[in-house]
Amino acid sequence: MSKSGYYAWATRSESSHTKRRRCLAKRIVRVFENSKGRYGSPKVYQALLRQGVRCSENTVAKIMRSKGLKARVNRVYVRNPKLHRFFGRIGNLRIDQPPPDRINKVWVGDLTYIRRGKRFVYLATVMDVHSRRIVGWSMGERKNVNLTNRALMHAIRKRHPPRGLIFHSDRGVEYCAYRYHDTLDRYGITHSVNRPGCCQDNAHMESFYHTIKGELIRNREFRNGRQLRNEVKGYIIHFYNKKRLHSALGYYSPIEFEQQTCNDKY
Image (spheres, rainbow, N blue to C red):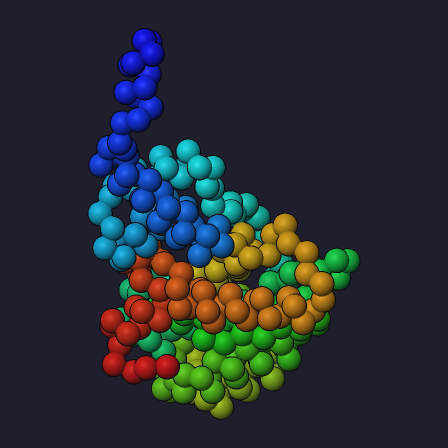
C-alpha cells in the first residue's frame, strides 16, 4: 500500500454501518451484564426488541460470540426418584389436563438442596403454573415437613387462593405427611402427586431448580447462610419473578404475564 493510500485509509471517517454495529454491541453488553450473564442470544435479542432496538437474532449471536459473551450453562442432573409412601387415594390430577387458564388454579411445589461448603441448605418453593411465578418459598438446614409447610403458608398468605386449587408435588414424605395434608385440607386445596417413578410429572418445578442452580448457585462460594438466603430471595423476587424473560410466556416475566392476563394483582 502506498503512503498516500495508507493515510487515506487511516484518516477516513467511520461508516454509518460500523457506528450502528458498535452502538448495538454496547447495548448487547449492557443487557448481558444486567442479566448477570444469565441471558443467551435469544433472550438478549428479546430484551433489545423491548427497548425498541431493531436487529436480528443472528446478528446478536454473532456479536456475543465476537465478544466472548456466553450465558451460564445449566448442566442437567438426573435425580433418581425415591418413593417414600404410596398413597393410593391420591393420584395425578394433571394428567391429560390442559394448561391452567388463570392464576391460582394449579400450583406445584418441590424442594432441592444447595451445597454450602460441607453442608447443605434446603430450598422449598411453590410455583403458580399459569404464570410460572414463584409464589412461596422457604429455606432451612433440615429437609422436613416444617420446611415445605412454611413455603406453602407463604404462598397462601400472599395469594389467598380460592378453594378448589390443585397443589401438585412429588410423593416425598415432606408433602405426604399428616401435618401438610392438614394445611391443604384447611384451605380447601386438593393434593395431586407424581405417578410412581415419574419425576417429569413435576417438570415445571424441576425446570425452575435447573435454572436457579445454573444462573445463581453453581460455581459460587457463599460466605455464610445469611448471604445465601439473601441472594436466593433477591433472585426470586427481583429477577426471576419480575425481570426474567420466559419463552413459554411469550418472553414476558411472570409478573408481566400476570399483569397482561389477569385482573387480580399481587
